[in-house]
Length: 165
Image 1 (cartoon, rainbow, N blue to C red):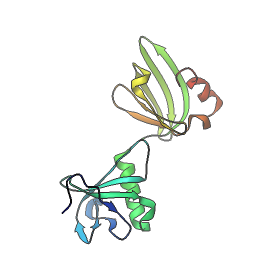
Image 2 (cartoon, helix red, strand yellow):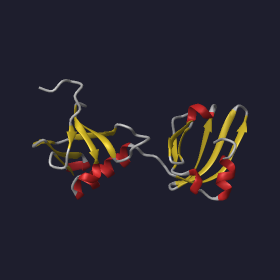
Image 3 (cartoon, rainbow, N blue to C red):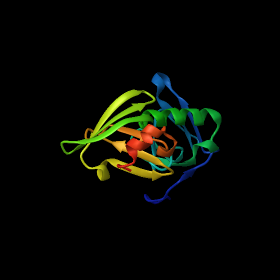
């Protein structure tokens, strides 16, 4: 019998994911069918496709998928889609401006989904650096955006980021 703190690693032969009626993620885990499954990234800022927690509709963890790339093609597609929905994170394509006014850092950004603005009081609380040039921005209202690699942005954007990064 497994202890409540045991971690079960789910391999490609243990799991299968698909879509049910209404677009609900469903699947088979250890030969048992589930009409609804919920997935979470165990390390959301560090690993996008690794260490994925698979849970039943009640929130009980069934196991961890070490890397979704190890699964069959349909399972990879469905898990990728589900994770994109859960972790909606617009990608910054350009930093138009970063200004400090009235105790607020005001950001004007272009993302792959269009322009957005963000306001932050303290940069240390609102910027996260997971590594490899990646920066996750969170504004006062909880809205988030991601700079996948600040070094690969255009020269204007990099100049705007010089004093804040």
